[in-house]
Length: 179
Image (tube, rainbow, N blue to C red; front, side, top):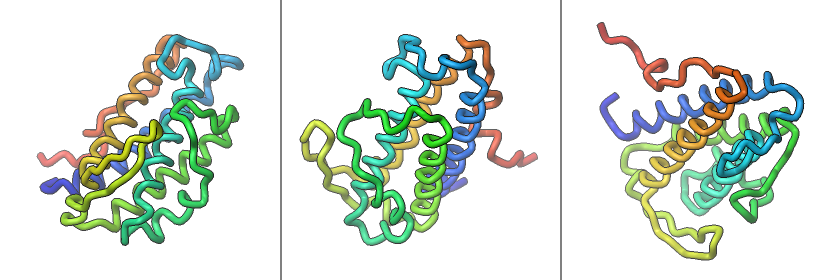
């Protein structure tokens, strides 16, 4: 990996891989544990999974005005925009997983269609609190991937408290050994 573009493509793959592992593990939770308030910021595993879907929808829909948004984001642009960061899109894990897979596919396709210069493009958007901001596409993707990793870390802690192990979470599992 030599460029920020390479890094973002790796992170998009990592994001998809880790989200699949998290959903596989969530499916092993005993009845009621998925929605149990475990004291996390978004209360439960399902609350945190919903938050990640909500924020990815928000970020990806903010990119709609960029030339490279189509066709990678066509599916995401058809989703009703969430109104709050803690909005519950679904309490059904299977339904939420299908949405997560759509979002991850869109992220991979979008990043896969970028070139290095695209990360300097400025995106003007309105946050959920009504504040208008302008950020580079590179900083948006840095945040998106970091945000996912942060909340997946919270989820893996909740899994651990419930006696489940998601397994290897290191991004290095997706990079080649150069020896």
